Length: 113
Length: 110
Image (cartoon, rainbow over all chains, first blue to last red; front, side):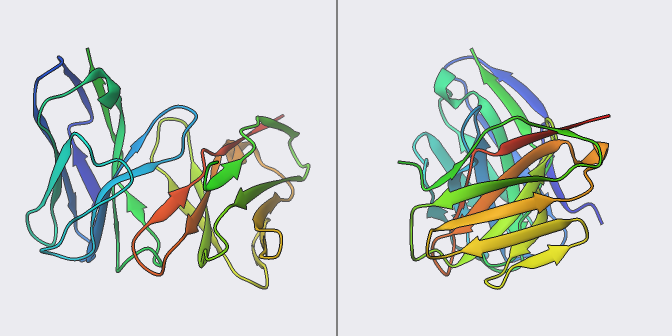
């Protein structure tokens, strides 16, 4: 039982490049989330998926897109990376909604130069 | 103003001592409250939920004060392994979105 897995662990991009961050969970959770964490700030929600087939914007969605590929997988895409997107990205899942404990993946450290 | 505010610390605590810190939240409609723990460069993990009547989990005690809109965490008999950043987390709505504080750093020293 791996929990929440994320790939890649580290990535360096040049401004304007695109990439997709992958996330998968094997806990049969319905809800999945993407956050970013910057120094001195709390985790900020980028997008979330309440259940398979639905996605909604969070607090900071600009510059990102998501796909809930199936119940297990929730990917985050940066179409044209900008230096302001340099951050640590965490994927999380919960059984159903924000009332339940959220389980986090190990994070992706992204640098955009 | 941030939705959830925490003293960033660090709180330097001798091993075996007690440390306590608070977190304030701005939305009076907040419904659920949690403390998460985050080790350096690692993912956050749930430490404990916070219930209206207050609750304990071993050496950890959490309290909620709805009137003053804050939650607290107290750690007794601190261990070196308690060194971490403690994140205050508030659920504003019944569904969907958690608000995270920036965290309070605790450093337990021998």
